[in-house]
Image (cartoon, rainbow, N blue to C red; front, top):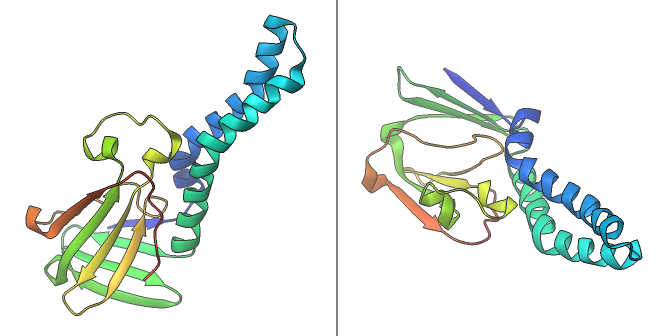
Length: 168
């Protein structure tokens, strides 16, 4: 049985490109000023613009995913093909046969199994819809890559630029 929680490791797995972008935003202006011998303040404006364009969207997606799955637990038992999702003190147990469909939301590059270009492309989330109407949101902070052994017709892949998740 595999047990997934929002933990420090998943924060690092998803957030390292964002951390790298923030470091570049801080170091880049200083590096430019030492090589060009210009005033460092003008280069900090460039760093601020890079932060707003590159790092800030990733921070927003990361915080959104954290708020959606904070405190949740996802357990998957391969032998029984059984899933247990614990949210807000309640536990829901179901099998893979109970799943109507899974809607995965990911970037164009991630869906094509290519390298990410911007920091937020590593994030993805899935909505699990059960046959009884229940819905669950599983973000990459909870389960880094939700690849359930389902038939291809039960998995819907939605490719988009920004992927903010909503909690069900």
